[in-house]
Length: 96
Image (cartoon, rainbow, N blue to C red):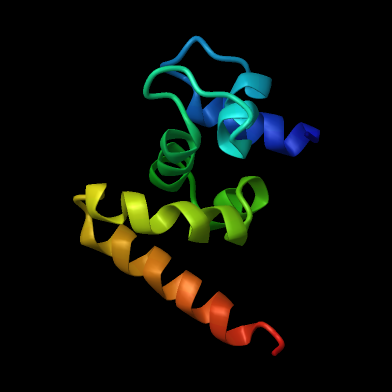
C-alpha cells in the first residue's frame, strides 16, 4: 500500500477505529469480522470516494466481483447507474 492509498483510506475510516491495513485486509478478502468484509469495504469505498480515488484503491475486478451482490443496497440511483456504466464500459473496452 502506497502513501496515496493510505490517505484515501483515512477519508473512509473517519468514523471507524480501524487501521488502513485492516481496511485493506477486508477489501482484499483476507479478513472478515461480523459485517466487516469485502462487500462492506467495496460498498464503503464506492459511497465515500470520488471515481479517481475509488479506482486508485479498488480494482475493476474486485468491483465487478462484488457489485451484483451489493448493487441493490444503494439508494442513490446515480451511484448504481454510474458503477453499471463503468463496469459495462470496462468490460467492452478490454481486448478480446
